[in-house]
Image 1 (cartoon, rainbow, N blue to C red):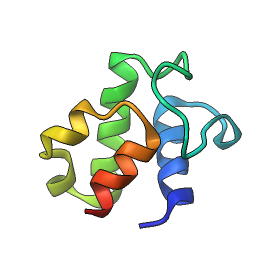
Image 2 (tube, rainbow, N blue to C red; image 1 turned 45 degrees about the horizontal axis):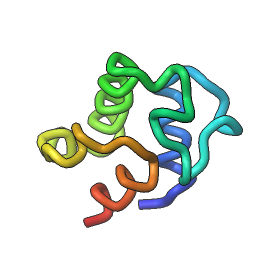
Image 3 (tube, one colour; image 1 turned 90 degrees about the vertical axis):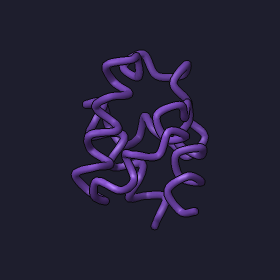
Image 4 (tube, rainbow, N blue to C red; image 1 turned 135 degrees about the vertical axis):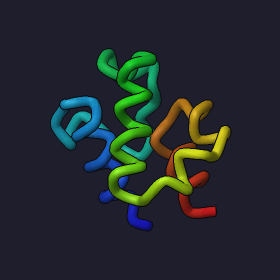
Length: 74
């Protein structure tokens, strides 16, 4: 698991440039990261890493890239 890969996944899901996303980004910082945007992030994570990750309830509640990263690497 690499931070830059997760940043690319989040950027793709939210349809923003990777430069707009950092490991410190959270949903309140990015206009596109609303409830629908979060579903898109979850779907991209599922596409990239597989079904097992998306079933984690902590992931559904995560509100930042760093929080998602910590959940995925555990």
